[in-house]
Image (cartoon, helix red, strand yellow):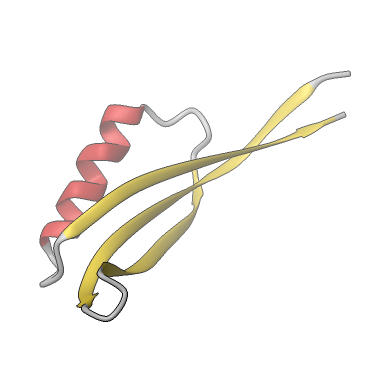
Amino acid sequence: MARVSAPSRLTLKMQTGYDNDKGQPIIKSFSFANVVANANDTALFDIASTLANLSSYPLYAIVRTDIASLE
């Protein structure tokens, strides 16, 4: 068996509002596919932060999803 890395996904979660009835923020996700699997976490964080600064919504979270297949 071998683990084969596939492209990762980078997701920016932005707070687009606040639901007063539920008492929690409204979060929208913006995803970027085909991120190089061996990309440095710090570099991805810096890129995501820069992209978030282009938005009028505050950044809530940055999520990296790594995908691999077992063969």
